[in-house]
Amino acid sequence: MVASLKGCMGSDSVPIQINDDVFGLIVFKADLIDPSSYLSSWNEDDDSPCSWKFIECNPESGRVSQVSLDGLGLSGRLGKGLQKLQHMKTLSLSRNNFSGDISPELGFLSNLERLNLSHNSLSGLIPSFLDSMSSIKFLDLSENSFSGKLPDDLFRNSLSLRYLSLAGNLLRGPVPSSLLSCSSLNTINLSNNHFSGDPDFSRGIWSLKRLRKLDLSHNEFSGSVPQGASAIHNLKELQLQGNRFSGSLPGDIGLCPHLSRLDLSSNRFSGALPESLQRLSSMHFFSLSKNMLAGEFPQWIGSLTNLEYLDLSSNGLTGSIPSSIGDLKSLRYLSLSNNKLFGIIPTSMASCPMLSVIRLRSNSFNGTIPEGLFDLGLEEVDFSHNGLVGSIPSGSSTFFSSLRTLDLSSNNLTGHIPAEKGLSSNLRYLNLSWNNLESRMPRELGYFQNLTVLDLRNSALVGLIPADICESGSLNILQLDGNSLIGPNSRRDWKLSLAQNNLSGSIPESISRLNKLKILKLEFNELTGEIPQKLGILENLLAVNISYNKLVGRLPVGGIFPSLDQSALQGNLGNLLTIVEGTM
Image 1: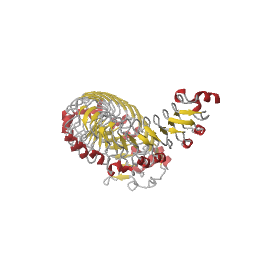
Image 2 (image 1 turned 45 degrees about the vertical axis):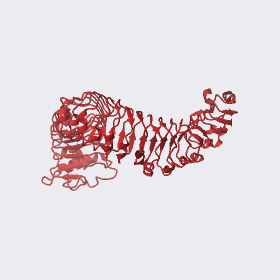
Image 3 (image 1 turned 90 degrees about the vertical axis):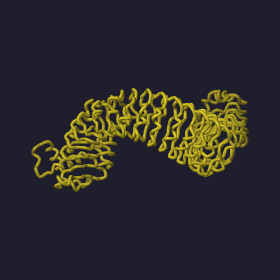
Image 4 (image 1 turned 180 degrees about the horizontal axis):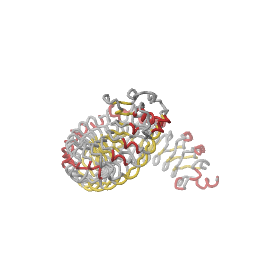
C-alpha cells in the first residue's frame, strides 16, 4: 500500500477516498526508523489521522494542523509526504536523530507558522525555500550541522517571523540583510556558529523595535557596538560574548529598563563602564569578563539589587570594592579576578546571604579576610595572589559543609590552619601555599575524605606530617615542598611532592603500591639508603626527582628510572646515573 502511495506522489490519479493528510503522513512514516513504535497508531486504513498520537486537527475543517514528534528517538531523512499537509501550521520534530538535508518539498507548506527541527543531525545548506514561507512565525533549526553561508535574501518574505534560532551549527559569513527587515522579530539566536563581519547594529539590529532576546555569542563578529540599544524598549537579554567586538560599550545600554541578562564577555571592548548601567535594576546576570575595560570599579554596583551573577574578571579595573556590594542580597556568583583592584575586602560582603562563589584572584587586596564570609554557605573561595594578612577565619559548620574549593595561596597569611570543623567537609581542593603560616599541619587534614588536592608549599610549616594524611582515599595531589616538615612521606597520590623539607630515613617501599602515581618529587631532603627496586614497576610514573638527598646504591631497572636525566639524580652520595648506565 505504501509503495503504491509513493508512486502516486505528485499525481492527479490519487484515489479521491484517500485523505490527503493520511496519505502524506503514511508516506512520511515509511521513510522513518521508529525504534520504540511510537507511531504504531498511524494506520493507512483510517479515514482520518485526527485520532493518531502526536497529531492535532482543526476541529472545523478536520485537517491536520499540528504534527509534534519531539524526542521520540526517530531517525531517517525528512523525505516526501509532508507537503500534502497543506493546512498544517506546526511541524515540530526536535530532539530526534534525523540526518541529511531538508527536503525542498517542505517549501510547499505555505500555511506553516511554526517549524522546529532543532537538536537533530541535519546537514547541508539552509534551504532557500524559506523565502516562500510567508506565514512562518517560529523557526528553530538549532543544534544541527547546517553549514555554508546564508543567502542575503533568505528572509525577504518572512515578515511575520518572530522567533529565529540557528544556534549550534556550522554556518558562516555575514548576517543576511533581509533578516533586518523582519520587524516582528522578538528573538534572534545565532550563537555558536562561524558568522563573521559587522552585524550592522546602527542601521539594522537596533531598528528591530520588538526585539526581546538577541544572542550572537560565540561567533566571529567584529566591529563596534554603537549607541542605539535604548530604542529597543523591551530588550531583556543581550548576549554578544565570545566575539571580536571592540571599542567602547554602548553608552545608552542602561536605558533598556527591562534588561535582565547582559553578557559582553570575551571580546575586545575598552574604556570605562557606562554610568547608565546603574539604572538596570532588573538585571540578574551581568558579565563583562575578558575584555580590556579600564577605569574605576563601579561604585554604584549596589544599585543593581536583583543581581545574581556578576563577572567583571580579566579586565584592567582599578579602585576598591564599595561597601554597597552588601546590598546585593540575591548575589550568588562574584568574580573580580585579574584586575587592578586594591583596598580591603568589605565586611559588608558577608551580608550577601545567597553568595556561593567568590573569586578575587590576582588583585592587590590587603587587610584581613572578613570572618563573616566564612560563615556563609560558600562553595568556592579564591582569594589567591593578593596581599591579604592576618589569620584564616575558623569558619562555621555551614561553611565547611558547603565548601568545595578554597584557594588562599600567594598572600601573607599567618597563624594556624583551621581544620577541626571540617571533619565532615566536602572540600575537594585546598591551596594555602606561599603564605607565612608558621604552624603545624593539623591531623584533621587526614580525615578530609573528599580532598583530592592539598597544596601547602612554601608556607613555613613545621613539625610532623600527620600519619593519617597517608590514608585519605581520595587525595591525588599532595604538595608540601619548601617547608620544614618531617615524618611520613607515603600515600596514594597521582602526584607526590615533598621537596625541600627535612624528610629523613629511607624511601618507603610501600610507594610501589601506588599504581596511579605519575609524579614523585623528593628533592632537597635528608633521605638515606637505597631507592626501593620495586619502584621500577610503577608503569604510570612519568617524572621523578630525587636529587640532593643522601641516597646510595643502584636505581631500579624498570619504569622511568633508566631514562632519568642527571639533574633529577645529582647531589646524592652515590653516582646513581653511572650505575644506571652500567645496568642497561
